[in-house]
Length: 178
Image (cartoon, rainbow, N blue to C red; front, side, top):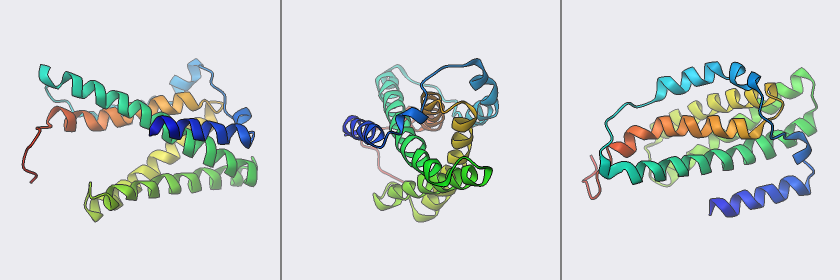
């Protein structure tokens, strides 16, 4: 499903001529500008022992996080932020509104965890606020790093991996939920 979503989003980006604004380059300054985000990722790593029987589960989680990072960055930072920047311009005010509004949409997208029953309402509301903050950081990184969408997708995936490692390592099949 994610692959189909990625293909659809790429088609839309091509159709609306938004790929010109997104560069897929690597540059050393991306690392320097992203140091604070790396610190933030490091503070979210859940250090837990991983049993050998969980290795395949951890690898699947890593692949899933990479897919989610790529998909969400293409949709939110590539498509939505690209459209907003095109509509509101490259003035300081236009950039701020574009990043904030796309981050708001990114955060609100996480209400799906409550709707699907994966989280309680308060937890989902906290996740929405948290995701909005992450969205602002990734939007700023995208703009400061010459619109390197791949760099943002990698950072997004690393953040998701850091957050999910403890959950996957402690996962017990057929356990009774608390």
